[in-house]
View 1: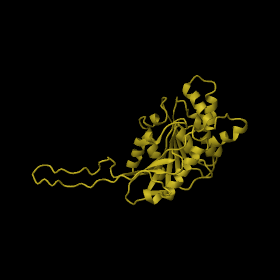
View 2 (view 1 turned 120 degrees about the vertical axis):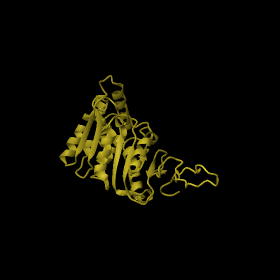
View 3 (view 1 turned 180 degrees about the vertical axis):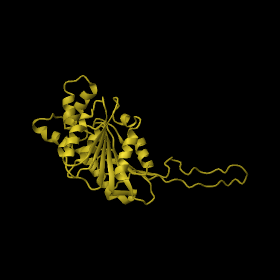
View 4 (view 1 turned 45 degrees about the vertical axis):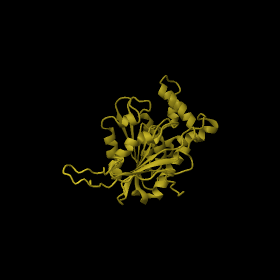
Length: 294
């Protein structure tokens, strides 16, 4: 098996064939795109040894190097799958990007920082084999939803910048698991309580004190801000259980080192992919991405 460990073969449009029937009338042809991919190619790639270390790649096989979009699904860090992101993946591929739709180890498989490690490994695999997917390894963004937004933002503040990373987008991102832990302590909101429990599980089952303080510190995105980090856009609903205040500390810390953070707040309570589908939100995110990678 190659280093890519390819798990699926790219779809190739079927060439049309004229009917052999000489009689007059409409000519019967074989559909040129039976899978409805519009000239796109798709394959699933394994980037590690765990069963969840895989990603779907969507690209236009025309030899032109295209900007990349990495998508990271949500699900409390403990559930979810890349298949829930298929329509969003397709939408970015249709816009002309090479799109990488990631699965990663869940908190039941491994504690933090396994999830960030997986995202970094997926990006490294994509950059190493960029030619295969008509991908420009020096021009890409990472987009995450809810818990996936936390992972995306953690990638954005990992080290002192990443080669080629031009921006990070979070839809309802949990920027601060510590705040989620505190917010879920004295509340009757079932979502905030579940988020608190999920953050504890992500940390390996322990609370943010004593021997576990280091892993909780690693989970705090804003604490790792550096001047070469990529700019970020975060989107929250005003009254959702992951409030805009989650992103304020990140805006402050990255701003201190000269990295811009834009926080967009929409009315209502919609969360994650539901928020993305609110009127105007997807268009705003797509415009922000286009301004950074074309």
